Image (cartoon, rainbow, N blue to C red; front, side, top):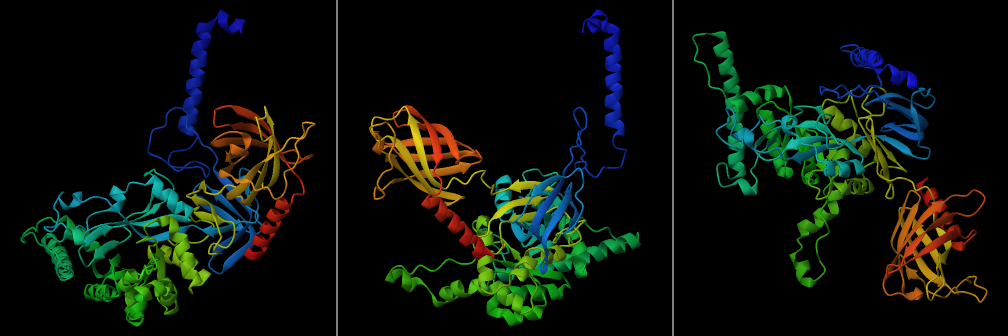
Length: 592
């Protein structure tokens, strides 16, 4: 140290020069221009502050049951993820030395689900910019890819349902614009767009709120859409004629008609909204008139005209927004319930199964759901009402991937495809199955984390100082680990200072807001048995000792603000613990 201080100036120059050379070498030569290492983060156009960092993002998901695709299952295997891609899948594959191993024994891996249709609001500015169409309902030049803004809250809900990609569709309009396939990874836009300009979207009617100007009826909407398609044909021919002959008059610019040119004569995918079963037939007539490669976005009513819809030969994007039961709680309400509404409530959950049985190609979507958090519940209802699990999975993975031209990148758990996965604790379509985690473009998103400890059973809590009455506390904790419940009651003090067990017929008070996160247990306890008025707050940090019962240390805060320290011990061989284990064994047997 003294030697450095005695001659700092020359050394500082040397040190700075050395650091600059090293930094330059790392920044400029660690990755050759135009090349990217397999473990590097996705390439970015943003400048990097300081040294460029290349953290390895390689994972090996081991020991899991892998549903590669509908009907293809590896009972116990490994999936290796590198960056945002799947590197390897198999029952007996070598784990890369740089991989972080995640044990998923007892879990099941599925391909990430694809929401086949969900509308997003991207504004109406395109109706007034550039050279728009004269009618504001005609905005085919709108592009979700250019306006998309990731919604963090919505993406969290979608991921909780296993959805890793969705077709984001512009809302509003008759000729609505083009959709994009977007990832549900978070709130960042720079990695969200997976494929741009997937399909042009058409709605052959107008919404109720937009009927103050032409068109203001379904008939007018169809007429305007047809006229626009014919105008687009003329527009394309006029520009070709002008380019071929300098003597021809130069046509005017029109962004809307120019945007439609690439969707003519079946050159691109078109999705037409069918707001009921009759609109599905109208949409087919429209598509045939202009030779469109069309897919129908269904309404859930297709079972009413199943044969006619099958004859169209069109795939159908099927919503699972099933109706609630009609209100028949009172005679007056029952009289308002029509036979049609009762029949639709009964038959709507069978719609996906009936379409599939009729040989119609289907993809399932969230469209129409008031809460996308109920998506899997609705899909499971469809499975319960006749749709096979394999067909349901295909309608959520392979079929939308094929329709939207991304089957080479997603839809199955195979090497070379995007690292989009979901992990469940059992069969995805089982009633009690839980989505534990979702992987989106190689990023892990956990939804249900297994607790470090199973706290169920009977606990004795020793208090210091003890309250004025009631003595120590006995807790009984039961229920599922994700939804614990329990009771509390006082342990009366003996004359020698030790606590005695209360009589079995003494009813305990129900615990409130029981929580378990990692090693911390908390609950609200009724404080009246201990001489207080109100609710006490209990907090324990759990300690695992292999040589003794599960223990914990913490505090209880009484309603007056005073506290008592706690030493907690779970009692071994309790009836409650045995019942919990028996219940778990029964649940496990039911799942198998």
